[in-house]
Image 1 (cartoon, rainbow, N blue to C red):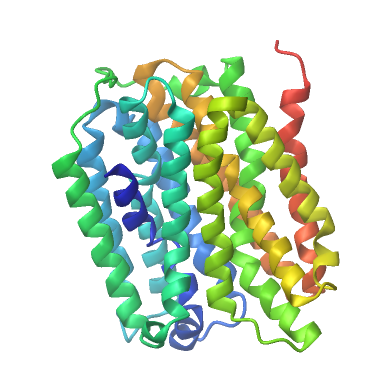
Image 2 (image 1 turned 135 degrees about the horizontal axis):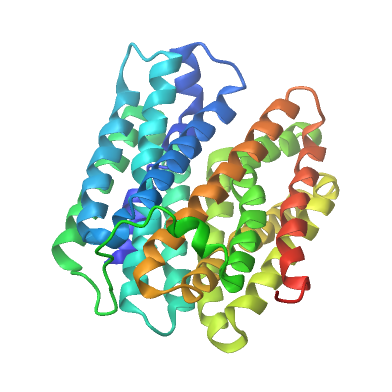
Length: 378
């Protein structure tokens, strides 16, 4: 139920990007709209996770109830995109609001899972982050079908899904057996957590992963468009974008099982290394035949997200039970703040740089994410 609800609610994340052409017509924005639409969601998510972490919302209140309320408010913000009088600032505020309330969905969903799994959390989070990825891909799949010719229908569909997901989780998933609620607000909890070596290392690995992830997802449509232009091909941009992102969900699930055999740390290292190599080799992908280009980009789509649930498992496993919600939310907050910089950097460079070289910049994230694990604990 947690997996299904996570899938339903996180479908709101890329809803704006899936109908970006329609939103550009409504608001008068140009190609820069891709960066604006996603970055405003990210900025809202950052603000939301900061507020949730400081107030320890997921640790002090029933996480299932928090999840439900946020799913409804996020859907309401998403429905603003239906307005015929949509301005640039209305768009950005609506996307910001959606992101803000997603802070009560994604990390809170992981917190609920952590309350149910004292052991095997790496596998559980693999399924959960996989659900996030499938939810992210859903709007692209819809926009690539006949239903996609009606953007209002897409927005209504994912909004309804979000509400249903939140209500069903609240009705069917009570507080977990390993939940230890915090009774007292601790405003210094965040700084105290970073003094824990295991938490700090896992957090910095996650931060490097986040530099790459959302920029890769946001600009994969541009990569496919560029390949079509350079090679006179007609690959479907929305369908292949949806496939590439969805395969990441599959890799999270497979990675969840593998983590039981080789451990979360080793699996995260492997995934981060592969995705970093893909960043560096990305210009060569555009010179390949269509089938090999798609294979390469699909493999990258699998590697780029497979480490996420494992870093989250390492984060959750390194801290006291009564601070798991706060610890996960804080790491999400900082990680998504980092993603804004990479998204905006690629958005800026995409207007005056050959697109096939853009993705090399993302290698900085995997490189920096691996460094903390090469140092001895102190």
